[in-house]
Length: 104
Image (cartoon, rainbow, N blue to C red):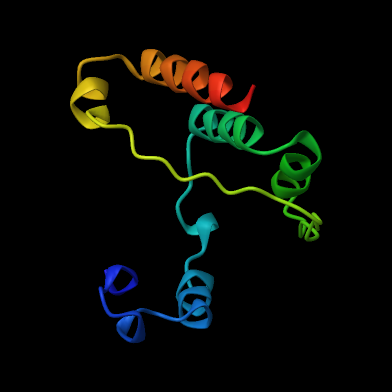
């Protein structure tokens, strides 16, 4: 919760967060084979294959550098109430269509 503090001086530093996360050992929480497979699928859905392969192998992923990048922030009015009425795949498809139009 300290990450959400309104006053930036009260928020945790990245070094503090990294130290806290370093203390968590994923191996301590064994997952079933189906949960591991599901987790692997999510990793491959979220990252490019070359990054996902390294993550799944437990290897460090080198930083990439881009000379120019765009960061887009948006607020979709009514999104929370709308998404509450839809299945997760419908929300995903809606967002894909929306951002696909903006990216075209």
